[in-house]
Length: 301
View: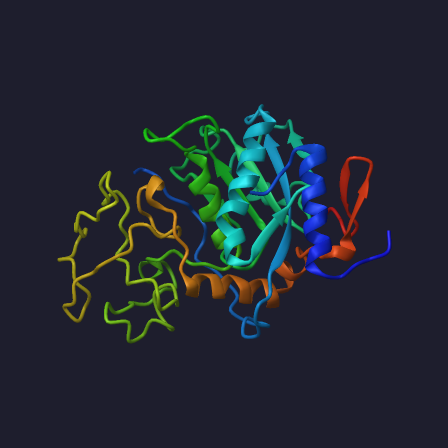
C-alpha cells in the first residue's frame, strides 16, 4: 500500500481494525508511583497536534483470564484520553507471563518494549503493600502496573480498575498527583495560586490539594478533614481541592476529570520526551496483514 501521511489514513486503519478483529477505540486506595521525574525537553509543542501511542498488555500469572477485560481497559483509556488529543493503539495481543511475580518495580524489566507503553496486570493480592497501581516514575519511563479484580464494580456501576489504570497512565504522561506538594521533592502550593507553576503539581488550573485520601464522601464532596492541620495553607487560606480530578487521591469513582493545563503538560511530554516520542505511531508505521494490524517499528528488550 502506498503510504499516506494524513490523519484520514490513520482513521481508516482504526475503523478497519475495529471491524476485523474486535479491538476498538472508543478509600484505601492509592498508587505508589515514585515522586521522580525529568523536566527537561518539555517546552515545545506544535499547536493542534494529536498523538497515537503504542500499548502492550501483559497479564501476570493468569490473573486476568478474560481477554475482554483487557480490551475494556484499552477502550476506556481511549475514552478518557482521546478527547485530549491522545489516542492509543494495540494489536490485541496479550502477553501472558506465567511465572509468579509480585507487583514491584522489578516487573518493569520483564519483556518490556522501547517503542510502546507496557501495562502489567496483576491480581489484587499480588503485592504485600497497599497500593493499587504504580507507574515507573512521573514522565521518565513507559511502564505501569495495576492490581485489581477486573470484574469488581462500583455500587453505581463501572469497573473499579478503570480509574486506577487511567491514573497510572497520567503518571506515565508526566502528571504529578494533585497533592504533590506533600510528597518527596514537592513544595507548598498556595491556595491563591501565586506559585502554581513552581510548586504542587506545577499546574495552575488544579487547585492546591492537601491530600484528600479517605476524605471524600459518596457524593464526591471533600469532608474538610486535614490530618495534623486546620484545613488551611500557611497563608491561612482554606483549601478547596478538586475531588473529581483523575490525579487526586479522591475516591476512585470520583476520579474522572483532566484539566486543560494537565492536557497541555501531557502533550508537551509526548512531543518532547524521548521515551514517549519512541512510543508514537504514525500512518507510516501501520499496515494490515490479513486481519492483523501490524506496527512496523516494534522492538523488545
